[in-house]
Amino acid sequence: MHGAKPSDGHFTGAADVSGQFVLESSIERVAWTPTVATAGAVPRLEVLTRHVGDGAPLSVEVSDLSGRPLWRASDALAGGRFHCDVPLPATMDPSVTAVVAMVRLPRHALDGSALLAIEPPVRLTGATWGRQEAHRGDRVSLVAGLRDAAEGSAVAVQVYRQGADGIDEALGEPLPALVVGQRVEAEWTVPDDVRPAPGTGAPAPAAVYYRLRFERPPESAPSMLLYVADAPAPA
Image (tube, rainbow, N blue to C red; front, side, top):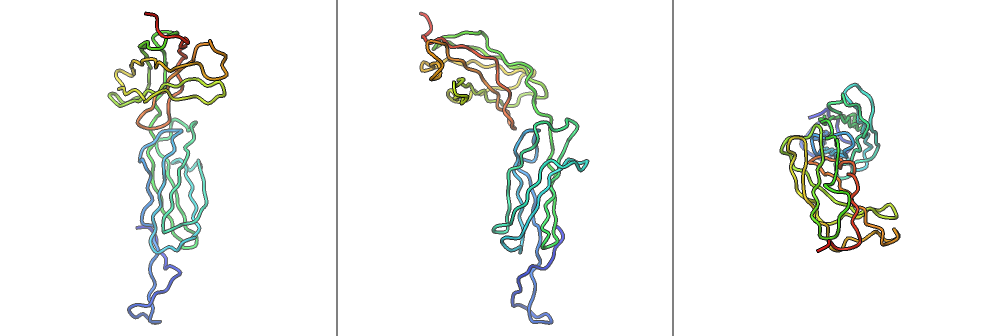
């Protein structure tokens, strides 16, 4: 338990000099979810207190172990709790192996902290399709090369259609895959309803790409484009 100070409230109870007793305020828990993250991830920080009134001011500072600040916030407790999503810098120094969240409640002279382990992000060394062009109904292979990926770890491959207005559309459910030899391989069947995005000027082909979703965010960079002709596969 972290340092404590009497709360502002007084409650009638077993005798002290005034005939009242004082409840001790404390920070019961400061925790990250998950407990391991990568640069660019957005883990959640949770603070649980005891006998600290609603509206008590709170400050949070996240820094690396050298003391370099990465993120700050100020807020107030509600229901004895506080939680927030903390965006970690995508350009964090590769030498950083952990960050620490320091939580302070100045009105009650309380503080607490929690460490978050930082792992190197999985690097994408290449993401290609087995061909450059396809038709609806074709089965197309894809291969992505990785670095720093855990062998045998699960990966989801999400295919997107490129949108004319910059808003891309996910096509179907993610394909399950595993990391084997720092590679991910899968096959995707081009859906029958894939068409060029509105405003692209049919009969131009639809442009699709994929991203990899790892066990820990962030999602990978996009793959090379695959062009889908506005016609079914030839018989």
